[in-house]
Amino acid sequence: MILSGQQLRDVYEALVLPMGHPDPIGYMARAFFFSGGDPDYYGGDGKVGFMPIEPERATELTGNGEVATLQNNVSTTVVIDLMYFQQYGTVNDMMVAFHFGEDMISPDGNYIGELGEFIETVNELRLSMKDIVSPRRATLKDVIKMLKDQLERKNKPSKGMMEVVERILEEK
Image (cartoon, rainbow, N blue to C red):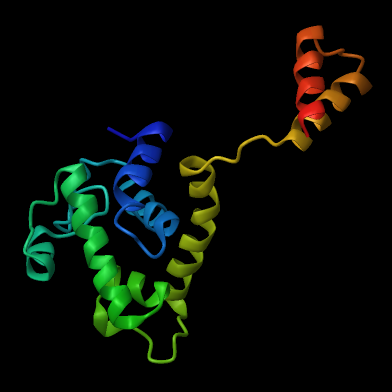
């Protein structure tokens, strides 16, 4: 089962943000990248869950190997990210340590090849994920532009819509 946009927002708002993740949108982007948004993900490499991880590795790092359920998976993997972020100090190093192992961390912070591509992919996915978990709300400017566009196309907005806009403008 793939999580819907609303379910992804719920995970983001109820689990990831409250735990104080240093890169909450990046976390969601990485989880989606690896599991496709499936909280029941099971990989051939033994990794399971929304943010795929081997239960043995989770146990070794946190003492909790129950990572197949969504809530346990997210809380455990966020804790691991927090540990790596505290230890290494950068989001890129945190991501590399989590997904590729601590021995892959670059001493100078420069990542090339597969690791550089991974970081670039996550950076690109952040933009899409931000629109899903934290959608932009229409501003007054957006509403006015939409109304002007409608007028230019001779699609007059309804009287009720114009009254709402006028009331908003009067309050400003």
